[in-house]
Image (cartoon, rainbow, N blue to C red; front, side):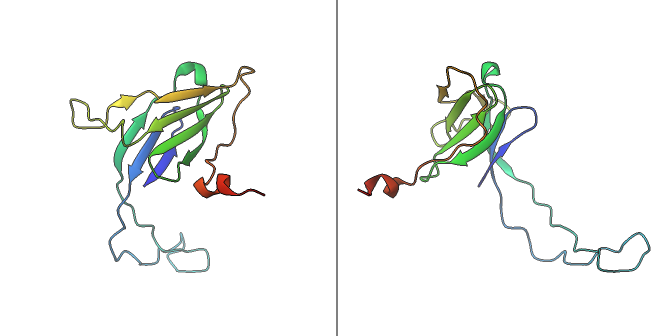
Length: 132
């Protein structure tokens, strides 16, 4: 499963299946001959969207994402000084068309100074157990 920050400001979670075997042929270059700059054709896999998240306008756009260690939540560091969090398991809903409904975050953590948040990371659960 992947979390993706899209160029239009949305956040999506995709389930991606392993690509099928095959399609390992080498692409030929413009000269029609294989060479060092030729590479195998990539395997294209269609993802299945499991979350379509809308970042609130006042939060800006998502710049970085991180999954919680339990795999349930996605946090997005945003350009408007906020961190948006979606609960992927709880918020998984289908719209009328059978696609994922677009959802706002489960909650938003704000920065009063509205400084862009360029990175976000969850603390590993066992890190807080250390006394040192």
